[in-house]
Image (cartoon, rainbow, N blue to C red; front, side):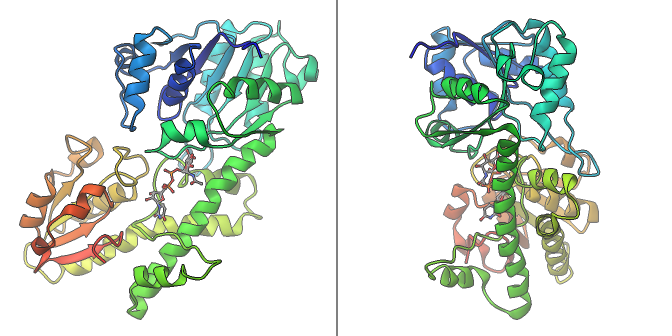
Length: 416
Ligand code: SAJ
């Protein structure tokens, strides 16, 4: 089949946009990446990357060197536009769609008849239709699927990303994709674009179902982690080792409990369930409770540390890990960061933070003045309380004889 997409523009060059742009470019499609961050644009144009993701540097470097990938701060004409911008929530857990709106308005002036616009950002149900309305308001000379159905000048689809940070390059190719076109033709065209690099199935559906599918996947995981986190608190009260308990229960052929931790982080699982709750607050009771259980876990860990600190003179607390999950540098919505933040605010002692993937104390923690970033060995040697917050691979290599005489709070089961 002839590829109708000779030039693709990816709006938002973050954890999803950049790998997707690089994969398309690796299939010899001309890709123009657009981002408001000039530093990110310059870095990419040098063939380098501004995020930590295994193997991505090699793909980006090859794509830039061969001339298939270029970054800029201003949208340019293309045959397809793929929007991968953040969709955070506001203080009241209401979704903030301002980045999607800004992206739509930024590409509107360069749209032409026949173009395809795909939204990839995790979004509340109805956002794709809203995006089409924003585009139509900016371009009254073009028609959109909510106005002219299959006859529209512009095709619009919602195609959520489902890749796991740390495995993005692999999963972009091997994960099945849900393709939610605003019409059947929109789905067919979006499938054609993704088939350039997706080796797995591309399954067509409606835009609304695709939006809900993404939210459902992450809410399912949030609920299951909430179950593990609740179990960990119950087991503490009953004097049972939760890690052993879960291992034993998982021997049952139809039981597969996830792992407890200091809470749930990242920009996805800790956020997306709220998009369901905010639309249907009365119906989403279980989903809402799971969020509350997981959001309560950092406070539970802080209470454990405070209790331990009460029994030592001059507490020095080593906090191992700041990222939201193992072996990445991403601190977004990190429960480990929240624990350190809450501890620092309590001013119960000096905090020695360890995070091998960053070079300095994050700005949000630096102001406290009682936090230092150091190596695991130095932190453990100087501390009397050691809190394991992230199970980075390198932490398993810590010499356990160093932990003798320390009070341990292992939220991840690394030392169980
Ligand atoms: N976590 C636990 N216990 C577990 C598993 C995870 O406490 O047993 C914690 C992690 O430490 C982390 C948080 O949950 O703080 C989320 O980590 P994760 O590995 O479960 O997921 P993410 O946020 O990295 O990626 C998820 C994935 N979604 C699902 O697995 C359903 C990924 O496929 C999505 O593409 C991504 O969200 C996204 O972008 O939405």
